[in-house]
Length: 312
Figure 1 (cartoon, rainbow, N blue to C red):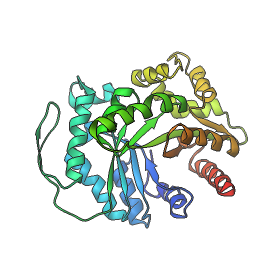
Figure 2: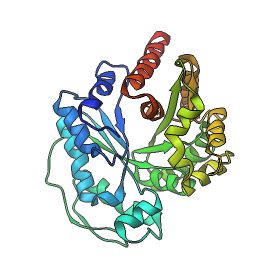
Figure 3: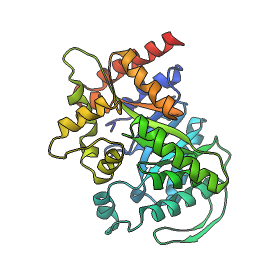
Figure 4: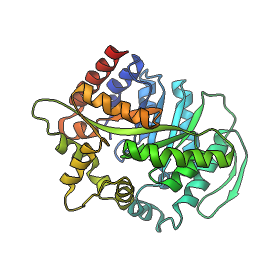
């Protein structure tokens, strides 16, 4: 969660110089992510960007489509508009009630965003969302619709609707055996290509005094306590105990769900995600950022990108 637009710029430089393909950010409750990315674009970061993910209850789908298209226009580059429902307490705090059917809520919301971005007139009064109208026509680079997926039914829906399926804490084996087949099944039923897969992977690189388990826990503690993440990890064979999060973090390390160690070890874990079906692997240094700050995050990414360059 950046606290200033300037904080994003050195991360954007990694993409600008060709060492990574896209600058990703998640939902921030400090500086709003679209505003932060627009600041970076205005400061010269004319690079591909993506959100993985922004939370649906915060904005109407018309606004979501407009903000995504605006960033494609401001950067002159493709943009991935990743969407997700958010945890149930967050949904209730904004809507006053939960989504009785998150799948229906996502289908309506994502369908509106997709059609608006395609230049269509939308006429929908749904169970959760309504839209009557269209975006004013504008020629921009493409905007891809992304959906956060954890479990098979949402993956099937992403297969029907999305351009990109975005995973978070999904182990490689689970990605290969559950998520990718579900995406393919949904896409086949809809008669469309399978969405690309962007897997967000937390990393912790070796550094003096760095405790990988502590770093992983700093990145994942909130998700490890969320029922929908616990259920997904249980399906993947990783039990999580909310009363012993350190042990859960250790299991994430042991299963290859997160990537820790020297540059070669981290990149082997990244390659395992590619082999499992990920088309794009998003390196998240949020644990390093939380404990050691921006300079340490950048040092980790510089180490990893230099190591990757040397193997090409």
